Length: 426
Image (cartoon, rainbow, N blue to C red; front, top):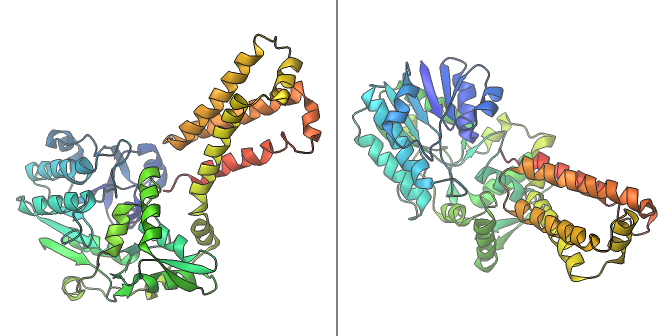
Protein backbone atom coordinates (compact mmCIF):
# COMPACT_ATOMS: atom_id res chain seq x y z
CA UNK A 1 0.00 0.00 0.00
CA UNK A 2 0.97 3.61 -0.49
CA UNK A 3 0.31 5.33 2.85
CA UNK A 4 0.43 9.03 3.69
CA UNK A 5 1.41 9.76 7.31
CA UNK A 6 0.97 13.21 8.80
CA UNK A 7 3.02 14.15 11.86
CA UNK A 8 5.63 11.69 10.57
CA UNK A 9 8.43 13.46 12.39
CA UNK A 10 6.74 13.21 15.80
CA UNK A 11 7.18 10.65 18.56
CA UNK A 12 4.61 8.08 17.42
CA UNK A 13 4.77 9.15 13.78
CA UNK A 14 8.50 8.48 13.55
CA UNK A 15 8.22 4.94 14.91
CA UNK A 16 5.20 4.30 12.70
CA UNK A 17 6.98 5.39 9.52
CA UNK A 18 9.98 3.19 10.31
CA UNK A 19 7.66 0.20 10.85
CA UNK A 20 5.50 0.78 7.77
CA UNK A 21 8.53 1.15 5.49
CA UNK A 22 9.23 -2.56 5.97
CA UNK A 23 6.23 -3.49 3.81
CA UNK A 24 4.69 -0.33 2.37
CA UNK A 25 5.42 2.84 0.43
CA UNK A 26 5.25 5.76 2.83
CA UNK A 27 4.69 9.44 2.10
CA UNK A 28 5.64 11.62 5.07
CA UNK A 29 3.66 14.85 5.30
CA UNK A 30 5.52 17.24 7.62
CA UNK A 31 6.61 20.84 8.20
CA UNK A 32 10.33 20.03 8.45
CA UNK A 33 11.10 18.34 5.14
CA UNK A 34 14.91 18.32 5.37
CA UNK A 35 15.06 16.67 8.80
CA UNK A 36 12.49 14.05 7.80
CA UNK A 37 14.30 13.25 4.56
CA UNK A 38 17.48 12.69 6.57
CA UNK A 39 15.67 10.40 9.05
CA UNK A 40 13.77 8.41 6.42
CA UNK A 41 15.69 8.35 3.12
CA UNK A 42 13.47 5.52 1.82
CA UNK A 43 10.26 7.54 2.24
CA UNK A 44 8.83 10.27 0.06
CA UNK A 45 8.56 13.54 1.97
CA UNK A 46 6.20 16.41 1.18
CA UNK A 47 5.55 19.62 3.09
CA UNK A 48 2.39 20.56 4.92
CA UNK A 49 1.48 22.88 7.77
CA UNK A 50 -1.62 22.11 9.81
CA UNK A 51 -1.67 25.70 11.04
CA UNK A 52 -2.64 26.90 7.57
CA UNK A 53 -3.70 23.94 5.39
CA UNK A 54 -7.40 24.12 6.29
CA UNK A 55 -8.90 23.74 2.80
CA UNK A 56 -9.54 20.39 1.04
CA UNK A 57 -8.22 21.93 -2.18
CA UNK A 58 -4.74 22.21 -0.64
CA UNK A 59 -4.72 18.50 0.18
CA UNK A 60 -6.01 17.09 -3.12
CA UNK A 61 -2.68 17.17 -5.02
CA UNK A 62 -0.87 15.60 -2.04
CA UNK A 63 -3.12 12.55 -2.17
CA UNK A 64 -2.20 11.42 -5.66
CA UNK A 65 -1.98 7.60 -5.80
CA UNK A 66 -2.46 7.34 -2.02
CA UNK A 67 -4.26 4.23 -0.71
CA UNK A 68 -4.50 5.13 2.98
CA UNK A 69 -4.01 8.13 5.26
CA UNK A 70 -2.89 8.07 8.90
CA UNK A 71 -3.11 11.30 10.86
CA UNK A 72 -0.57 11.42 13.71
CA UNK A 73 -0.31 15.20 13.95
CA UNK A 74 -1.07 16.78 17.28
CA UNK A 75 0.10 19.13 20.02
CA UNK A 76 -0.62 19.30 23.74
CA UNK A 77 -1.13 23.05 23.97
CA UNK A 78 -1.26 26.04 21.68
CA UNK A 79 1.98 28.01 21.43
CA UNK A 80 4.05 30.26 19.22
CA UNK A 81 2.74 29.85 15.68
CA UNK A 82 0.74 26.81 16.84
CA UNK A 83 -3.04 27.02 16.41
CA UNK A 84 -4.48 24.04 18.26
CA UNK A 85 -7.93 24.30 16.60
CA UNK A 86 -6.38 24.22 13.15
CA UNK A 87 -3.92 21.44 14.00
CA UNK A 88 -6.46 19.20 15.73
CA UNK A 89 -9.61 19.98 13.77
CA UNK A 90 -9.73 22.28 10.75
CA UNK A 91 -6.64 21.02 8.87
CA UNK A 92 -7.15 17.27 9.43
CA UNK A 93 -10.86 17.63 8.64
CA UNK A 94 -9.90 19.31 5.35
CA UNK A 95 -7.53 16.39 4.71
CA UNK A 96 -10.29 13.85 5.41
CA UNK A 97 -12.75 15.73 3.20
CA UNK A 98 -10.18 15.60 0.37
CA UNK A 99 -9.88 11.85 1.01
CA UNK A 100 -13.66 11.55 0.52
CA UNK A 101 -13.46 13.40 -2.79
CA UNK A 102 -10.70 11.11 -4.07
CA UNK A 103 -12.23 7.92 -2.64
CA UNK A 104 -9.17 7.07 -0.53
CA UNK A 105 -9.54 3.46 0.62
CA UNK A 106 -8.79 3.95 4.31
CA UNK A 107 -8.34 6.75 6.87
CA UNK A 108 -6.95 6.33 10.39
CA UNK A 109 -7.16 9.08 13.01
CA UNK A 110 -4.73 8.75 15.93
CA UNK A 111 -6.49 10.33 18.89
CA UNK A 112 -5.93 9.74 22.63
CA UNK A 113 -7.55 7.76 25.41
CA UNK A 114 -9.55 10.06 27.64
CA UNK A 115 -10.68 12.32 24.80
CA UNK A 116 -14.20 10.89 24.97
CA UNK A 117 -14.88 11.91 28.57
CA UNK A 118 -11.87 14.04 29.48
CA UNK A 119 -11.77 17.53 30.98
CA UNK A 120 -13.17 20.39 28.90
CA UNK A 121 -9.85 21.76 27.67
CA UNK A 122 -8.77 22.65 24.14
CA UNK A 123 -6.65 19.51 23.71
CA UNK A 124 -9.59 17.24 24.54
CA UNK A 125 -12.43 19.10 22.87
CA UNK A 126 -10.61 19.72 19.59
CA UNK A 127 -9.60 16.06 19.24
CA UNK A 128 -13.06 14.83 20.23
CA UNK A 129 -14.67 17.12 17.66
CA UNK A 130 -12.44 15.76 14.90
CA UNK A 131 -13.02 12.13 15.92
CA UNK A 132 -16.76 12.63 15.68
CA UNK A 133 -16.54 14.54 12.39
CA UNK A 134 -14.44 11.82 10.75
CA UNK A 135 -16.90 9.07 11.63
CA UNK A 136 -19.71 11.10 10.01
CA UNK A 137 -17.90 11.19 6.65
CA UNK A 138 -18.73 8.67 3.95
CA UNK A 139 -15.36 6.95 4.00
CA UNK A 140 -13.80 3.82 5.50
CA UNK A 141 -12.27 5.16 8.71
CA UNK A 142 -11.25 4.28 12.23
CA UNK A 143 -10.33 6.35 15.28
CA UNK A 144 -7.62 4.86 17.50
CA UNK A 145 -7.26 6.18 21.05
CA UNK A 146 -4.03 4.92 22.66
CA UNK A 147 -3.22 5.16 26.34
CA UNK A 148 0.22 6.19 27.59
CA UNK A 149 2.76 5.03 24.99
CA UNK A 150 6.30 4.00 25.95
CA UNK A 151 9.31 3.17 23.80
CA UNK A 152 13.10 3.24 23.88
CA UNK A 153 12.85 6.93 23.04
CA UNK A 154 10.83 9.43 25.05
CA UNK A 155 8.94 12.63 24.34
CA UNK A 156 6.31 14.67 26.14
CA UNK A 157 4.62 12.89 29.02
CA UNK A 158 6.83 9.79 28.93
CA UNK A 159 9.96 11.95 29.06
CA UNK A 160 8.56 13.79 32.09
CA UNK A 161 7.79 10.51 33.87
CA UNK A 162 11.31 9.23 33.23
CA UNK A 163 12.75 12.47 34.61
CA UNK A 164 10.61 12.29 37.74
CA UNK A 165 11.60 8.67 38.31
CA UNK A 166 15.32 9.48 38.04
CA UNK A 167 15.46 12.26 40.63
CA UNK A 168 17.86 11.60 43.52
CA UNK A 169 16.70 10.55 47.01
CA UNK A 170 12.95 10.46 46.29
CA UNK A 171 10.37 10.16 43.51
CA UNK A 172 7.81 13.00 43.58
CA UNK A 173 4.23 11.98 42.85
CA UNK A 174 1.66 14.16 41.12
CA UNK A 175 -1.07 14.15 43.74
CA UNK A 176 -1.31 10.78 45.44
CA UNK A 177 0.03 8.91 42.40
CA UNK A 178 -3.09 6.73 42.35
CA UNK A 179 -4.30 7.74 38.86
CA UNK A 180 -4.61 4.64 36.67
CA UNK A 181 -3.14 4.12 33.20
CA UNK A 182 -2.87 1.21 30.79
CA UNK A 183 0.48 1.82 29.08
CA UNK A 184 1.02 0.31 25.67
CA UNK A 185 4.41 -0.43 24.12
CA UNK A 186 5.26 1.36 20.90
CA UNK A 187 6.01 -1.93 19.13
CA UNK A 188 2.41 -3.03 19.83
CA UNK A 189 0.90 0.34 18.90
CA UNK A 190 2.45 0.45 15.43
CA UNK A 191 1.25 -3.13 14.77
CA UNK A 192 -2.25 -2.12 15.86
CA UNK A 193 -2.21 0.91 13.55
CA UNK A 194 -1.07 -1.17 10.57
CA UNK A 195 -3.75 -3.76 11.33
CA UNK A 196 -6.53 -1.18 11.22
CA UNK A 197 -5.15 0.37 8.05
CA UNK A 198 -6.03 -2.89 6.31
CA UNK A 199 -9.04 -3.98 8.40
CA UNK A 200 -12.57 -2.80 7.49
CA UNK A 201 -13.55 -1.90 11.07
CA UNK A 202 -15.19 1.52 11.44
CA UNK A 203 -15.57 3.31 14.75
CA UNK A 204 -13.54 4.17 17.84
CA UNK A 205 -11.05 1.69 19.28
CA UNK A 206 -9.31 2.22 22.62
CA UNK A 207 -5.73 0.99 22.29
CA UNK A 208 -4.69 0.02 25.80
CA UNK A 209 -2.44 -2.40 27.59
CA UNK A 210 -3.99 -5.40 29.38
CA UNK A 211 -2.91 -4.24 32.87
CA UNK A 212 -3.98 -1.07 34.67
CA UNK A 213 -1.20 0.42 36.77
CA UNK A 214 -1.05 3.51 38.96
CA UNK A 215 1.15 6.50 38.25
CA UNK A 216 3.18 5.55 41.32
CA UNK A 217 3.80 2.04 39.94
CA UNK A 218 4.82 3.45 36.56
CA UNK A 219 7.41 5.73 38.15
CA UNK A 220 8.83 2.94 40.33
CA UNK A 221 9.12 0.59 37.32
CA UNK A 222 10.75 3.28 35.20
CA UNK A 223 13.34 3.91 37.92
CA UNK A 224 14.13 0.19 38.02
CA UNK A 225 14.32 0.09 34.24
CA UNK A 226 16.78 3.00 34.18
CA UNK A 227 19.00 1.07 36.58
CA UNK A 228 18.84 3.51 39.49
CA UNK A 229 18.67 2.45 43.11
CA UNK A 230 15.25 2.34 44.72
CA UNK A 231 13.85 5.48 46.33
CA UNK A 232 10.86 6.47 48.40
CA UNK A 233 7.91 8.17 46.78
CA UNK A 234 6.64 11.50 48.08
CA UNK A 235 3.17 12.84 47.29
CA UNK A 236 3.36 16.49 46.32
CA UNK A 237 0.51 18.64 47.65
CA UNK A 238 -1.44 20.83 45.25
CA UNK A 239 0.07 24.04 46.67
CA UNK A 240 3.44 22.87 45.31
CA UNK A 241 2.18 21.39 42.04
CA UNK A 242 -0.01 24.30 40.97
CA UNK A 243 2.79 26.95 40.91
CA UNK A 244 5.00 24.55 38.93
CA UNK A 245 2.16 23.97 36.47
CA UNK A 246 1.61 27.72 36.07
CA UNK A 247 5.34 28.23 35.48
CA UNK A 248 5.20 25.49 32.84
CA UNK A 249 2.31 27.27 31.14
CA UNK A 250 4.11 30.62 31.26
CA UNK A 251 7.54 29.46 30.07
CA UNK A 252 6.34 26.61 27.84
CA UNK A 253 8.38 23.96 29.67
CA UNK A 254 7.43 20.86 27.67
CA UNK A 255 4.62 18.74 29.19
CA UNK A 256 4.87 20.47 32.59
CA UNK A 257 1.65 22.44 32.16
CA UNK A 258 -2.01 22.60 33.17
CA UNK A 259 -3.16 20.38 30.28
CA UNK A 260 -0.87 17.48 31.13
CA UNK A 261 -1.71 17.92 34.82
CA UNK A 262 -5.44 17.65 34.19
CA UNK A 263 -4.98 14.66 31.86
CA UNK A 264 -2.75 12.96 34.43
CA UNK A 265 -5.33 13.39 37.19
CA UNK A 266 -8.06 12.01 34.89
CA UNK A 267 -8.66 8.23 35.13
CA UNK A 268 -7.24 6.79 31.91
CA UNK A 269 -8.41 3.19 31.59
CA UNK A 270 -10.63 1.11 29.29
CA UNK A 271 -11.38 -2.60 28.73
CA UNK A 272 -8.70 -4.29 26.62
CA UNK A 273 -10.88 -7.16 25.39
CA UNK A 274 -12.66 -5.17 22.64
CA UNK A 275 -9.23 -4.46 21.13
CA UNK A 276 -8.03 -8.05 21.54
CA UNK A 277 -11.17 -9.29 19.75
CA UNK A 278 -10.23 -7.24 16.68
CA UNK A 279 -6.53 -8.12 16.35
CA UNK A 280 -4.66 -11.40 15.99
CA UNK A 281 -1.82 -10.84 18.49
CA UNK A 282 -1.56 -10.29 22.23
CA UNK A 283 -0.86 -6.85 23.66
CA UNK A 284 2.19 -6.88 25.93
CA UNK A 285 1.46 -5.79 29.51
CA UNK A 286 3.43 -3.11 31.36
CA UNK A 287 6.13 -3.34 32.70
CA UNK A 288 7.04 -6.49 30.73
CA UNK A 289 7.15 -4.41 27.56
CA UNK A 290 10.08 -2.49 29.00
CA UNK A 291 12.17 -5.65 28.68
CA UNK A 292 12.13 -5.20 24.90
CA UNK A 293 13.88 -1.85 25.38
CA UNK A 294 16.82 -2.32 27.78
CA UNK A 295 17.87 1.10 29.04
CA UNK A 296 21.16 2.53 27.83
CA UNK A 297 23.48 5.24 29.10
CA UNK A 298 21.75 7.74 26.81
CA UNK A 299 18.40 7.03 28.51
CA UNK A 300 19.89 7.86 31.90
CA UNK A 301 21.50 11.01 30.49
CA UNK A 302 18.21 12.21 29.03
CA UNK A 303 16.27 11.51 32.23
CA UNK A 304 18.78 13.37 34.38
CA UNK A 305 19.14 16.30 31.99
CA UNK A 306 15.40 16.81 31.59
CA UNK A 307 15.03 19.26 34.47
CA UNK A 308 18.58 20.61 34.11
CA UNK A 309 17.86 21.76 30.55
CA UNK A 310 15.44 24.58 31.53
CA UNK A 311 17.68 25.49 34.47
CA UNK A 312 20.63 25.87 32.10
CA UNK A 313 18.59 28.15 29.87
CA UNK A 314 17.38 30.24 32.83
CA UNK A 315 20.94 30.60 34.13
CA UNK A 316 22.11 31.88 30.73
CA UNK A 317 19.17 34.31 30.59
CA UNK A 318 20.09 35.68 34.03
CA UNK A 319 23.79 35.83 33.12
CA UNK A 320 23.17 38.00 30.05
CA UNK A 321 20.56 40.14 31.80
CA UNK A 322 22.66 41.06 34.83
CA UNK A 323 25.89 41.38 32.84
CA UNK A 324 24.08 44.14 30.92
CA UNK A 325 22.15 45.67 33.80
CA UNK A 326 24.85 45.89 36.50
CA UNK A 327 27.32 48.03 34.46
CA UNK A 328 24.45 50.38 33.60
CA UNK A 329 23.64 50.89 37.27
CA UNK A 330 27.20 51.03 38.59
CA UNK A 331 30.47 52.68 37.59
CA UNK A 332 32.94 50.05 36.45
CA UNK A 333 36.57 51.21 36.39
CA UNK A 334 37.57 47.98 34.71
CA UNK A 335 35.33 48.69 31.74
CA UNK A 336 36.66 52.23 31.50
CA UNK A 337 40.26 51.00 31.67
CA UNK A 338 39.60 48.45 28.92
CA UNK A 339 38.01 51.00 26.58
CA UNK A 340 40.81 53.47 27.24
CA UNK A 341 43.43 50.78 26.51
CA UNK A 342 41.70 50.14 23.20
CA UNK A 343 42.09 53.81 22.28
CA UNK A 344 38.50 54.96 22.79
CA UNK A 345 38.05 58.66 23.50
CA UNK A 346 36.23 59.81 26.67
CA UNK A 347 33.30 60.82 24.46
CA UNK A 348 32.98 57.46 22.64
CA UNK A 349 33.67 55.10 25.55
CA UNK A 350 30.33 55.68 27.37
CA UNK A 351 28.41 55.10 24.15
CA UNK A 352 30.20 51.78 23.55
CA UNK A 353 29.65 50.75 27.16
CA UNK A 354 25.91 51.46 27.03
CA UNK A 355 25.59 49.74 23.64
CA UNK A 356 27.29 46.57 24.88
CA UNK A 357 25.09 46.54 27.99
CA UNK A 358 21.93 46.89 25.92
CA UNK A 359 23.17 44.13 23.62
CA UNK A 360 23.59 41.79 26.59
CA UNK A 361 20.07 42.58 27.77
CA UNK A 362 18.79 41.97 24.23
CA UNK A 363 20.48 38.55 24.20
CA UNK A 364 18.79 37.77 27.52
CA UNK A 365 15.36 38.60 26.12
CA UNK A 366 16.02 36.81 22.82
CA UNK A 367 17.13 33.68 24.66
CA UNK A 368 14.10 33.77 26.95
CA UNK A 369 11.70 34.08 24.01
CA UNK A 370 13.75 32.10 21.50
CA UNK A 371 12.32 29.58 19.10
CA UNK A 372 15.21 29.74 16.60
CA UNK A 373 17.71 28.25 19.01
CA UNK A 374 20.60 27.87 16.56
CA UNK A 375 20.52 31.54 15.62
CA UNK A 376 20.39 32.72 19.25
CA UNK A 377 23.12 30.24 20.16
CA UNK A 378 25.41 31.52 17.42
CA UNK A 379 24.83 35.12 18.58
CA UNK A 380 25.84 34.14 22.12
CA UNK A 381 28.96 32.31 20.93
CA UNK A 382 30.03 35.22 18.72
CA UNK A 383 29.42 37.75 21.51
CA UNK A 384 31.42 35.81 24.10
CA UNK A 385 34.24 35.26 21.62
CA UNK A 386 34.28 38.95 20.64
CA UNK A 387 34.29 40.12 24.28
CA UNK A 388 37.13 37.69 25.09
CA UNK A 389 39.26 38.77 22.13
CA UNK A 390 38.69 42.48 22.80
CA UNK A 391 39.56 42.09 26.49
CA UNK A 392 42.66 40.06 25.59
CA UNK A 393 43.87 42.77 23.24
CA UNK A 394 43.09 45.62 25.63
CA UNK A 395 43.91 44.11 29.03
CA UNK A 396 45.56 40.72 28.65
CA UNK A 397 46.48 40.85 32.35
CA UNK A 398 42.86 39.93 33.06
CA UNK A 399 43.76 36.31 32.22
CA UNK A 400 45.79 36.28 35.46
CA UNK A 401 43.19 38.09 37.56
CA UNK A 402 42.35 36.03 40.71
CA UNK A 403 38.61 36.43 39.99
CA UNK A 404 39.18 34.98 36.48
CA UNK A 405 36.88 37.30 34.48
CA UNK A 406 38.22 35.94 31.18
CA UNK A 407 38.78 32.34 32.21
CA UNK A 408 35.08 32.17 33.13
CA UNK A 409 34.22 32.78 29.49
CA UNK A 410 35.48 29.30 28.62
CA UNK A 411 32.89 27.38 30.72
CA UNK A 412 30.25 29.87 29.57
CA UNK A 413 31.07 29.03 25.96
CA UNK A 414 30.78 25.33 26.79
CA UNK A 415 27.46 25.95 28.59
CA UNK A 416 26.06 27.63 25.46
CA UNK A 417 27.24 24.70 23.31
CA UNK A 418 25.61 22.22 25.70
CA UNK A 419 22.38 24.26 25.63
CA UNK A 420 22.40 24.14 21.84
CA UNK A 421 23.01 20.38 21.89
CA UNK A 422 20.15 19.49 24.25
CA UNK A 423 17.57 22.21 23.55
CA UNK A 424 15.95 20.28 20.70
CA UNK A 425 13.53 17.99 22.57
CA UNK A 426 12.74 15.94 19.50
